[in-house]
Image (cartoon, rainbow, N blue to C red):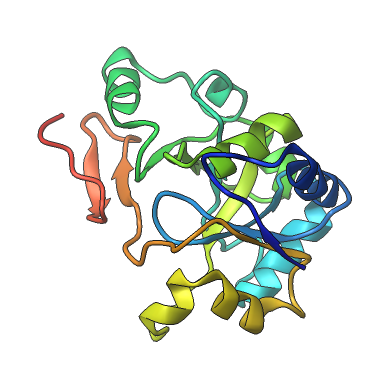
Length: 205
């Protein structure tokens, strides 16, 4: 299903369709403040495994990132974050950043692996954040595109739908997407460092 949702005037009935789909183990492609993302409910292992098959990666190998509505619940999934890291995250989020943090024991229990880190995203996109807020917990996120994809495909929801309509349950058309990824900042060491420079820019730490 291709579902048009306007980011500045979100149709709550359509949003309920998306959330109900996720609760039933569905896969959804949705807009963010960077590229379109592919996601599912973090608590539905079968849905996570479907994403792994689409991305052609084993569940124990995939690098998980969670879309969160805000930072209020990150302690549910991460080890204690020091003040400097928290201030950096507060300064950058919502925004086009992924913060790599140390995972707590909830992650291995969720995914039956020995994952030690987790990526946290709070995108500057009302649709993505409302999905999480209405669902009541984060969703897994991974970008829909691959390195060899053309720009039209990764930014246009109709083109994404043509490619993924038989693989996912809903593609949300939230307007033209971006083609640059988020900036990834690793905060698991004493000092944060940029793993991947994306669209997000930090003047200093």
